[in-house]
Length: 407
Figure 1 (cartoon, rainbow, N blue to C red):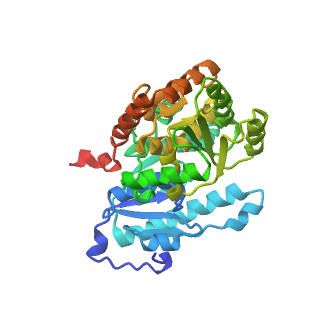
Figure 2: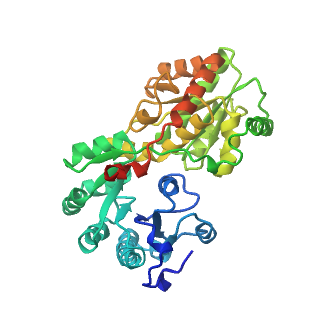
Figure 3: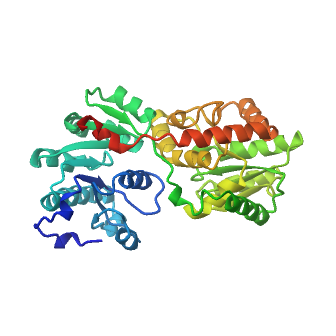
């Protein structure tokens, strides 16, 4: 990683190639949501991209080995101890991203900016007037929520979007929310997240998958013949892990040998464990805690069904919570696992009913039970949906296609 303060003004032939500055307030090597989305984008065009992001713990080694240049602005964590944490952090992000973007322009003379979040957009708006560049702006669910109810910022944000070359939404759900809340003529593109196999070591070796599957099952004392249901996410009430647990005794009653593995941490964990004990299935509901991406491969391999029954709350909560967990559904499909999911939001971009999983009304206990029963009893159906899921996850929309009109 190069020190931003030491950037010179001399432009060499090698440095003249990159023409896209990607700016992301969040870019942490292990973050599975926005950072992974941004990283996958950068890897599509490593020769064209320069990345500018805020500093984070443990990024130095990652930045040095990157295929594309990465520059960082400082992050003042000590302000988080005070009440104006968000205000100070946003102000510093605006100032540093603005100044360093100009400095990088004199080094690279990039032609485009891809702004990877709606937050701190005033810096982007100023840059669009000062620099001879065009820009694209990415929108995630939380970006729209933070601005939508603030009239002044909403009008300024709308001006920024109008000046954009294009808007990138991570899901059709976010796109529809944008369309209904801000009426714009700016071209809008839906680019769903993709699975990056490099997150998982030896992810294409079936023999290794089989070994991983066996190891996890042995660790939790799960027979090979048992059906394992995997759920991943922050352990909060809106994720409805309790509804997965509720179905375990019902499935046992009809003679299905079934286990549940839950990955994640959160304040709802103690309640979920108490629920399993109350139902006398605590030996069949296994809490794995927080798991690294490399370890996740073992759990995807070990399971037979991936199930997440996100709850329907307010529209605002749906657009934020569902968007943040969609990567796990994609990864489950990549590993050939059928999915049971709520018929909500951005999940409709990822799960196609009867193709790679089953969509259910998460508030209908009977409908949820029938979905579990159907997949648990029908191994051929599980394998069919898994194969079709692997094919669907290969269909990708690339950010580089934003520039196809130039060709």
